[in-house]
Amino acid sequence: MTATAPSPQPSPSARLSAAPAGYPAPMYPHRATEAQHTERRIRSFQPRRGRMTNAQAGALDRGWEQYGIAIDGSPLDLKTLFGGLPVTLEIGFGMGETTAAMAAADPGMGILAADVHTPGHGNLLQLLERNGSENVRTAAGDAVILLRDMLTDASLAGLRVYFADPWPKPKHHKRRLVQPSFLELALPRLAPGALVHCATDWEPYAEQMLEVLSASPELENLHPEGDGTGWLEPADHPAGSLPGYAPRPEWRPVTKFERAGMAKGHVVHDLLFRRR
Picture 1 (cartoon, rainbow, N blue to C red):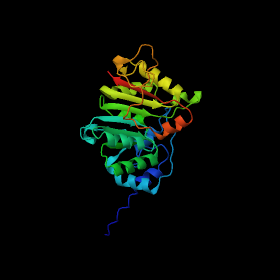
Picture 2: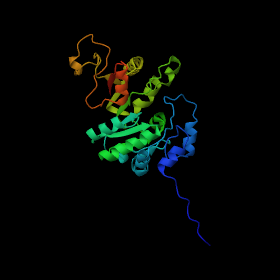
Picture 3: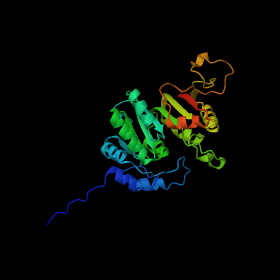
Picture 4: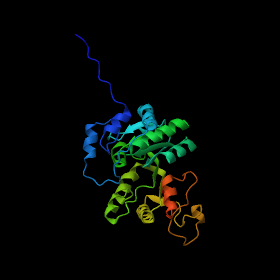
């Protein structure tokens, strides 16, 4: 009897590119993934497929098995994944330039970088490969599923949300990521002392972020009286200099979204809060 040779498996980049937009990872199809994808829930992102360059696809194929994570609902052991490093969750890393720069500048911090954009995963893996950084894991899919089903309580040392889609039309405000319901989901996953850092160039969204974060008794605004124009320690804040925005800290590089917003005359707001 002649043995039948197993069918060759498509590469991670081919599997991800073949998946419908918004499915979480090159490991598609997963039954659990399909069930989660059809949840009746408002999402903060608009799934995009996009076309990968050959360089991005190559980096994805080389790096996914070691550095990629499918957001499929399976619990994660962050201590094992990151070799005991403290871990910050970054939601929405775009093409990964900022993530890669911050990873290279602070190799003692693990970064769990989540996004739904396929070329972004390939580009981030390409940048990490170029920099020799090993402290990042790129998670493909819906960050709500990641927080809700895959992370344990007090497992995160930080949370970053940089230039998330502001959904400017009033009818779309319900799609904004930073909402009370999102904070209720995220807070238990943050260890005491964890830093929550948000940035946006859309002022109405900055005001919403400030309102949502300030309303939580479990969070402390590190710049409660700051106006975003200079760095002050909390004890040195002048009275009456509201509304509570922080200056851009040196560790956050200027992003391409930030530069584009400033070119349009937008004012960039950073918000820094600490988990009590």
